[in-house]
Amino acid sequence: MRHLSIGLVFLSAILWGLSGGLGSFLMSKGWDPLVVSFYRGTVGLICLLIWFVFRPVRLNKRLSLWAIVAGIGIVGNFVFYFVSISESSVAVAAALMYTAPIFVLLISFIFRLEKPSLFKFITIVFVMVGVVLLTEVYNVGSDQISVIGILSGLGAGLSYALFIFGFKYASKHGEPQGILVIAFLTFTLIMLIFTDLNEAVSVIYSPDLFWMVLLGIFGAGVSFFLYVVGLKKTSPTSASVVAMVEPVTASAFGFFILSETLNAVQLCGMAIILLTVTVLSVKKG
Image 1 (cartoon, rainbow, N blue to C red):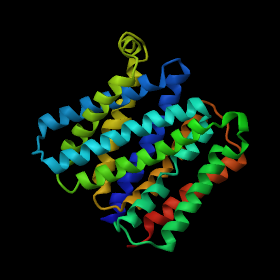
Image 2: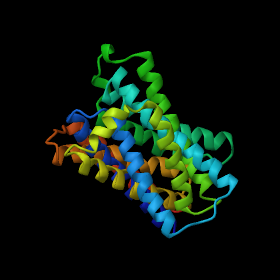
Image 3: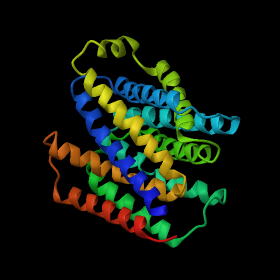
Image 4: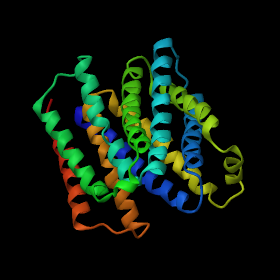
């Protein structure tokens, strides 16, 4: 059962990676990153509302509270990530956002949610090495690094950890459809504050509407459903490490679909991440 749960988290991370590639494609066509994020979450919310109507569940205060926390975490992850990109670079932002497993591990140990183990520390170190090699953050010049960029990138990682814990504890008090509807309703309401609504409306009349809808279906509706279901039987630290397959999928999307190049060092980084996640997935206990 544990292997199946990790498998679901793994699949959700693959879909997030594909969504990242699709989002990059849309942004290369001139769409604002926050508009792309808004459609990703809002279309996902519509999908989840349809599911909720056909399979309604009872909501309670604890479920609602943790689902709202998860929704805030998703917003923070998206917003801080894009601020970090604008203030530094994609490589720096990605490397900092994927410090999430470190935050998850520290929080889990501080609040005694998990027992510390050398194996978990080692897996996080290997994943971080893989991310650094994949993003080639070491090649970034000092002119591409700023205090705001660094703090925003770390904020994205901390927000990543926040939605992991939000979903983890919400799943103890109810069914996925209720959790996800509240989380993405929170996301949509908050994103309305940051999003250029005029540009968001213009998407409806553009030929890119299909891609925006596809992004929302797979990048939120399906992927987060798989994630929440898988998270029920998976520890927060394991889930955060397995989810690091996302940059690998995004890079593969860029290579095969967007004709981007990958050098030997980046391929080595991908291999380290995949190998580490595989070892974690098959390990018993």
